[in-house]
Length: 236
Image 1 (cartoon, rainbow, N blue to C red):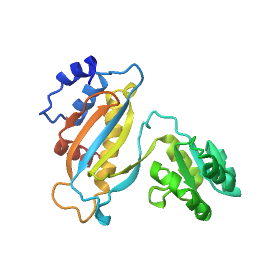
Image 2: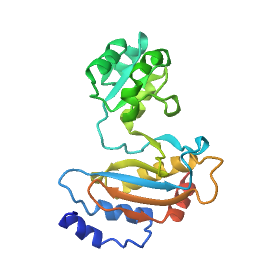
Image 3: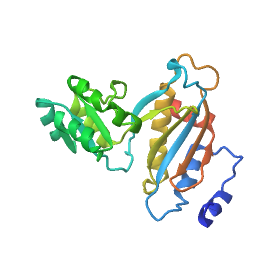
Image 4: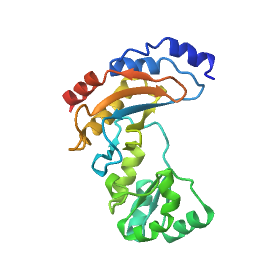
């Protein structure tokens, strides 16, 4: 059952209204519910069929103000690339040794995994561990690369991976309540712009069907998708 504070905030939001994106984020930012610094998330409902390979929307975006999270990065590489990864600020760097640790000890004290192409045959051995947790390196999102320094820097700066789920919705964090409405707006526009650019050629009709923003513990606030998309296109 929803708490008293949640119900109070919910009553102050018109569930039938589609708010301008900036106003929606001001509402979310002004109504914290938890005592901790809540994450603000954006949910984008797309007019695609994720069961079709050519409509499986995914991509990455570096949020201008980051996510507010401290991300622990594991780099799986060998030789000179290990040194590059350490210098770039990776939290854990290794190869066979760390793959064995994940395999035998189920060690998962990291948030993102970056790997060089020459070790992917070894990484495949832990695919059943990393895959279900969304941690498997993938060249499509830039986590399988020889440019490990750039990849680590982008993740640390607030790079977000997004992918449409089975229900046709993209969920992604756009920052913390402490960011304030303006920084959240700029992050939200960056994410929305990336999702718009990832539109499949086979997608028909209205690509974006709905958008909502919410904090970790708060109710969702619906967004005027037409106006938001126009703002993003204008800023691009």
